[in-house]
Amino acid sequence: QAQHLVARQLALPAYEQVLKAAHTFNLLDARGAISVTERAAYIGRIRNLARSVAQGYLDSRARLGFPMAPRPWADEVLARLQAQHDRKAA
Image 1 (tube, helix red, strand yellow):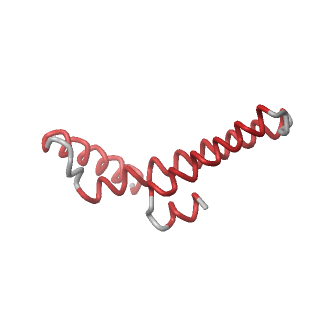
Image 2: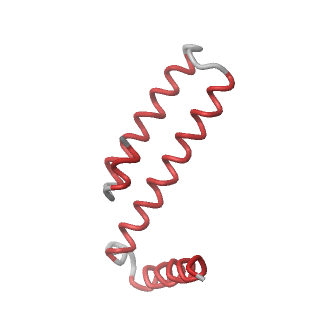
C-alpha cells in the first residue's frame, strides 16, 4: 500500500504505512517468527519503502517551493535539487 500511495504522491499516508510495516516487522521479529535470512530481506524492503516515501515528501515540498522555510534556505535547496536533476538528465 505504501508504494501505491507514493505513486499517487501521497507521502504522509505512505509514511504511516511504512511505520505500520516496521511495527509489524518488529512484533514478528520479537516473537521469533522471522528467520535470519527473511529478516534481512524485510529490513531492506522497509528501508526502500522509507527511502521512496522520503523522496516523495521532498519532491512534494519542492513543488510547493518549501513554503514554511526561510526564503534564502528554500532558494538554496531548490537550486541544489535542480542541479541534481540536471546532472541526472545529462
